[in-house]
Amino acid sequence: MALAKTAVAFSVPVVVSTSATKVYSGPLMPPLRAVLKDVVPIERRNMNLWEDEAAKAAVVATGQRTLVVAGLLTEACVSFPVLSALAEGYRVPPSGCRYCSSSSAIGLAARRTRPRARSWSSTQVATALGWTTPAT
Image 1 (tube, rainbow, N blue to C red):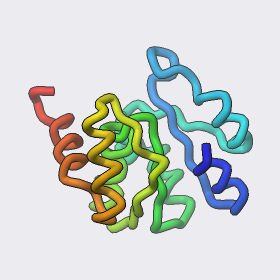
Image 2: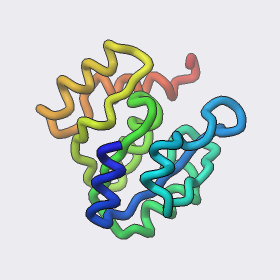
Image 3: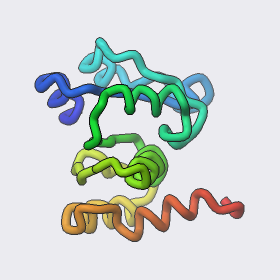
């Protein structure tokens, strides 16, 4: 919530995307929706925002080359688009608000390594790459 409130207070462009809202994720959380009332969420089909044409186009349309990314799960909602954005030359600085995880070990590793390294930790990269292998 702090990132959303700060973005609104400083008129920072915000892109919100959701996935599988009718299947399992549900709609955008009501408190977040209340803060970002002027932002229309983009329903994406891919787990990686960067692979969804409409969502990526919305990010590109902001004209910003530095992105702050937040999501429900570090290992999916955050890691995939951040790795994709970094590969295309975007700057994605660490943000303490985005370390949510399905595993306490992954969350702890993200909180400990990301601020020091100022880049994606090997745990986060390994997790993201692990999710893209045929075995997963």
